Image (cartoon, rainbow, N blue to C red; front, side):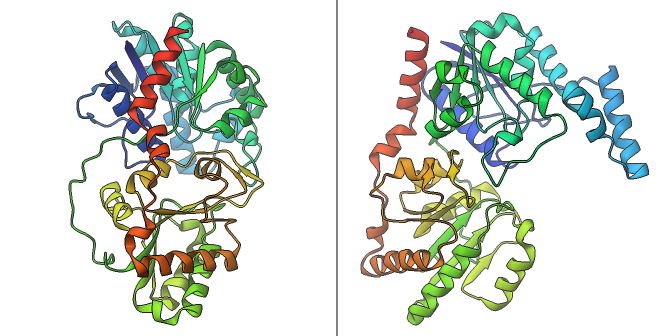
Length: 413
């Protein structure tokens, strides 16, 4: 089967979404499909054993001129015109130029795919907008929906209303109606998005974020990581809605209750945390058992530490529901270490781990977090292997074999 993947970015360092997209692409190739990737990374990037084409930005057209003129105006006069124009047109001039660039490149391709997969990141969905403008591809189009869209359809506390929300609603309604297939990384997300765009319930299937082969190029631990300690790791950006306060205070309470653990336990927070800068500076100053990075860490280093930590933390926002499957979930499963899930009761992470999984708490329940860390610490003291995750069911669910079954079944219907 020939598969054309149209994707925003294949730079694994720019976002968790790109990491998830690259893992999916790699597993499509590993599954034996003939895959061609058209990407708009705007960097010269080649994936190992994957045919990739970097889509060039079109620069001789009115949208390019308007987008650059708007940027210069904003820079000079300190007035952001983007919100004004987007309220009327729905999207920025840059968005239109980007999608036109993608459309032009795909039109010129002589690759005749059996399936066209669109992958995006964040709130972009540029590949989806581009393929929507190519009706000849709709009968073989699988629209992968990684997050709710538009932003006001996110669950609280992420949601807010954009001035251009009506145009974005119409765009995504068209995607739901025109794409022959749709896919979601989680069952809860399919149900959530399908409640706003019902056709996704008819066309949707679940393709979770993937465990994929990744070679760590540097196997040297950074100075701040002592592999012999009881290491509790949170890796990833701490968005404004993902407050680490409950985790940090829970860890400190665990230390207060277990003074002897101070010399052999460490909490590591690796990633961007600018939304919590004041809190983090205070923790840095007063809590030597907590290591906080000064910004993003290269994926190579993070992945090495994930595989050698005692506990990997998945921290989600305080909410009634979290329908997302975090992009780090496959990495944590592959690391085969206990996962401390700090998430709402209704969350995809908790659903996959199971109702009887012992290490789950709401993200702000300090006392419970402290108790769970203490339980894991005492097990670690007996034998570090007591904290192995050992979930073959999840490894299979996130594997190339499962992905292949889903794609083959899709085309046989």
